[in-house]
Length: 226
Image 1 (cartoon, helix red, strand yellow):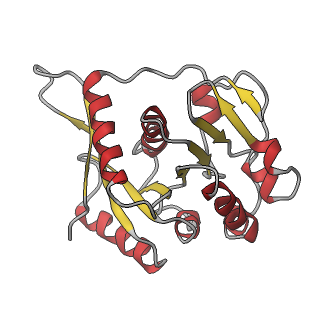
Image 2 (cartoon, rainbow, N blue to C red):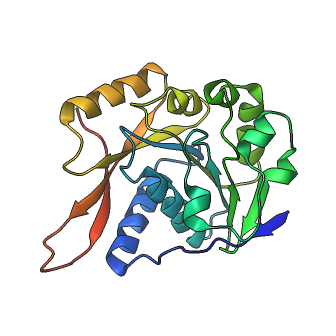
């Protein structure tokens, strides 16, 4: 397996790190049958990619073997954000039969964490993610990894997330605090449920405590309630 060094990652503060441990613990209590997790949001810029990647890191730090799949084939910024130290092939290369699994799976400089980058933007993202090739990839990874974290586009923008969710064991919905209305969140939940997918819970992102006391943004986890 090729090795890639991810750079520019900002270390989480103790309070944020603790919040991810809480999220990690809740996921582990979902049971051994929950291995493939689809992470999405209502709209762009809610921080779902940060949440999904940091969740993958947190699980890896607990000793679990984890693979992070960047399945946001339309507008991914994982490569820009973490600036790998070499040119990489990605998921769209594999799904379009240009490359094999061993060409797109990279060992990172973080213990227990491997990654599949998105690759170049294809003309047919939904069709590729709905293909047997993607299903086969997830099933192969199930035999190797304890957890598969799949970052997907916002549900409110495109159908890709619903397509991916059908191939996963559950969905985690990232919601930006004070930015998403209850009505929109309910609409997104219903869209996910129509795909037959199981919603594991929601992550409230960018929630600010009293800055005089903490001065940080923190992520909490809780089951999404009607």
